Length: 157
Image 1 (cartoon, rainbow, N blue to C red):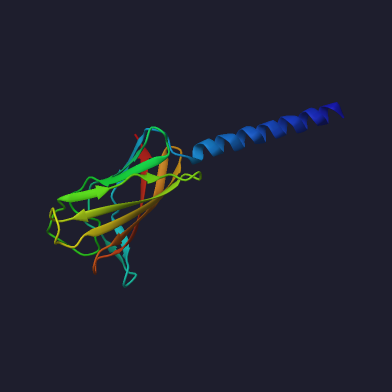
Image 2: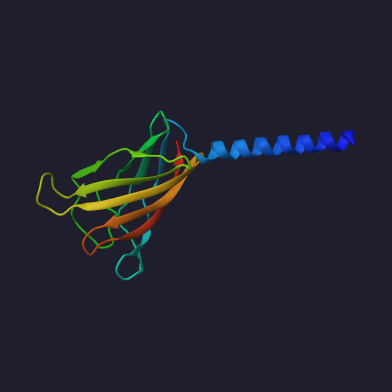
């Protein structure tokens, strides 16, 4: 009877430790920068067709030292669009987005081909969920006739 009780306690302790470890792995690593390649393909918003994208560069996700917020940027001067453009981006602005207890976030990036008012902007809504050293999510592009959705994955550096 005594051996059975100690085995039960040992099993309960092991499950508790495993649960605690998985809970820690669910959130972001504080103060780290996650980087991954920009998406290569995506699905258009109007036709639901999978097409090749020409954005290039990387997606960079920076976690604040507090671990409570994140900022997202693209390194390429070409936007994640679902139609070809020869224009390069000149403005990319974003605000820090809060990270939920489950490790997910939703950040918005506003991009423009020219500084100042006038030209239509492109809105990239980046959602993601942290799992320790990786973050995976989607990029929802809102642009007249060139919108769509793609996925990304980034790893802590």
